[in-house]
Image (cartoon, rainbow, N blue to C red; front, side, top):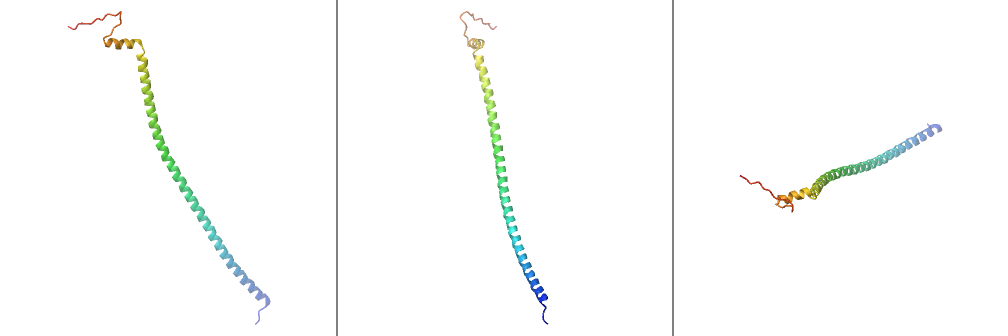
Length: 123
């Protein structure tokens, strides 16, 4: 029982195919592992970067709220100072009028040289 040449050749070829098939499977498996590892690293990078972005965004929003509150307080103080300045300017302008000066002088009992004081007697 000798094997014929084509049958032996077929068997060796089949064995070579099986070996190459198992090598291809091992290579495919290692390629899948390296691809999976790269994807995991990429996802880890994306997660870390996204976390940093969210942290920065929230931090900036909180800082903006603080600055807005400070700005509104400063704006209110500014408007109050402007109002007080306007009131003082009105008083200064009023003090510079002759009528107001005369009213103050008369309330303190002062008269002009050409005026005569007339008082009413209480009964």
